[in-house]
Image (tube, rainbow, N blue to C red; front, side, top):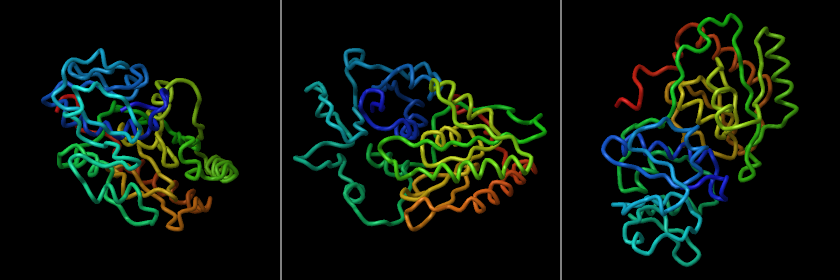
Length: 285
């Protein structure tokens, strides 16, 4: 699975597909085709996890998980080992066949869906058993901070511009939060590593459905997600997520609604009801 750096899928899709690693790395060597430096910022190191940008760096795999719907020329000797998507004429199909997933790919209707992890495991011939994201975990951030630090994550990728919440509402939300006495920080530019570090330093992230939301979930950073055209049922909350969904499919969330939810959620966080931390490291499972 590639990422947007080399004309593949979005960074968010790459990161949440790492949920497979939580099982595969327990028993297998895994080679991930993508942009190694970016992947190293997203996923914690493991002795049997290798990031490569060339098929020549991979030996003879037992199985190839083809997770994206873009045509990548694989070595001929690998083709019989592929699980996942394959192109049949002008339609993408699945092997093993998952008719429900193929229907979702080409469906234009709006309906509730099972989680992305459920379908990803099924696409690879496995059953998801609640495995979490394979992610770095933050520890002890914000415990000594008197004024909660809230991050605003407004930017969306080119693939889903309709997931954006209007910037004037973000500015109004920031003003209301600051007037309430909270400290507000905005999504930074820079490297992937600096982006991850920014999220892990927050008491609360407010985000549209994009990469930052998934990074927060992976690190157990409390996050409020704003949804409209995409489905919150596809993303487990992992004990720290709170989803606001506009069923019309439009990003019409009112500033007052988001502000009130954020204030109440911060109260729960400060009261110890939302821990935002794991008891164990995933890499030690």
